[in-house]
Amino acid sequence: MIKVLHTADWHIGKSLYRQPLEQEMSLFFNWLSELLIRESIDVLLISGDIFDYSNPTHQDTTRYYDFLTKMASLGIKVIITGGNHDSISMLNAPSELLKTMNIDVFGGVKTDLFDHIIPIFDNEEVVAVVAAIPFLRNKDIKGSANIDALMESIADEESAIADIYFKIVTEITLRYPGVPIIAMGHLYMRGAITSDSERDIHIGTLQGINKPSLPPQVSYYALGHIHKPQLVGNDEMCRYSGSPIFLDFSERYYTKQVLQLKIENKTIKDITSHPIPIFRNVSSHKGDFNSIQLALDTISVSDYGLKEYVDLTIEAEQLDSFETSRIVQFIESNLQTDTYIIARYKVISKTNETHFLENTYVLNELSPMNVFEKFLESKDLDSTQVSALKMCYSEILELIQASET
Image (cartoon, rainbow, N blue to C red; front, side):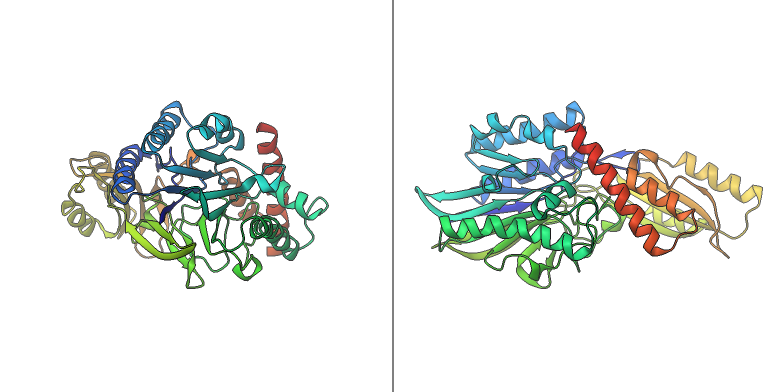
């Protein structure tokens, strides 16, 4: 029997409105290592967005390589595919060295699509095959379908994405008939529920893809890109593992998880969800000044000793200078206490929700597409024009990224 663990969307280096998520990421790595040992996992799949930025810090890359070194010492096979946040060249740079440690890395699509085929062995017998497909950028899907410049329709894009999967999966069925196929993917499946933390969700797959368009021969789709753990179309064999820690306040109701597959007699026998502990609580509170104070008084640190990150919306009865001064003084004196940190706040009029004080927007948390979307909002454009301009802008971003990698 072979045991496979599916995870994705680590976003190492992510901050939550300037508040670091380093401590909970370190706690997650410790917990994950213990789980891998306890469950005797043979293969670890990481389906994209390893890092939050394409140029991660030295501290973030050190955390990543320390974890991979530990995996190698445990004898665990690791397969990593790049996401839309990852730099292809950064992930691929040590790939030949990592191969000697039984770690396969696919930052981007290789020239030979069949290089993405990874057989899984049990006592020298191939018992499963992984199609290790990373995030598909426009240049990848255009090259597959020979589509000129801008793709003519969403159908062209969906067909091009499916074409890559079909080519790889068809080759697998020829080489390794009768074994289960696990296809990794970092993409948006239509119908999946997103959160506020998915930046540039449609770049490269502007409108997403329908699951029926993908190869039916695949036994399990190990997906990344969406941070909410979920099945796609209620299909037990097509899943987003979700991100392992809270990356946004909108995710506070999600139970974070990793997924375990058992392969026995060349069949996927069981899928188990392992809930990830809540290393740090995040909470949102909306109400008048007094109710906000009461809510904050009830907060305590997490079971892991981490202060809670808080999002406040204070509703003011009137917008006079006295009330403003009182609220500002309260916020400034309570930005960080023994039990919580105010990561985001805004004050609005209780009558018409007019904002008059906030720290909601943090420039370094906005992607280029986020900034462009805000620019488009200020223009008198219809939805067709906005969609066309966003597609063109995504092309520019793709070209820039390609030139950097």
